[in-house]
Length: 180
Image (cartoon, rainbow, N blue to C red; front, side, top):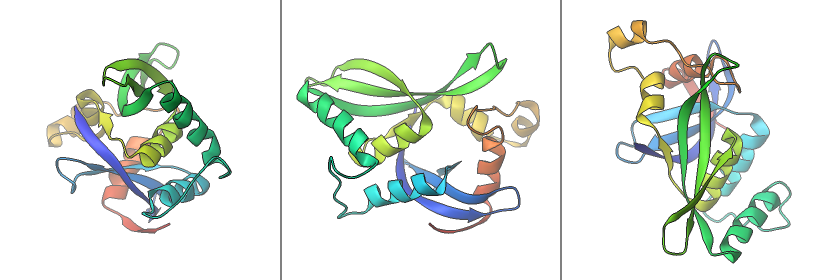
């Protein structure tokens, strides 16, 4: 497994993609980063949460829902201990799709439950709680081939949120970027 942390959102200008992306940096090698396209409003919210002195509470418009969720876990002696990103085969799509789960633990540190969420919810909660995102080896292999032979022999995975997310992420890594 590979741990990544949400570090910020940036604006990317590339031939095939022009818009904001959330960046996740590998905890063991911060120079290795993953880029995922998101919309401008969500990029601003994530950057707001990641600022050192940003205060968010129950009255903060969109973040109030997430704050309530976190508070309800804490009131029942549970906490968000991690986020897991993996792929699962979808028989309807006949392809691998992105699967994201929150790992909720009890006060002793034992995993109490795994809750399926979408990408945006996972990124916001990771930013708010400062937890790592675990990217499975299987997903990472599909996103970043190890050598030239792998690039041509492995199929590119498709995710329901954006059919070209892997191609976009690869191009972004070599493209021009600017802060959102």
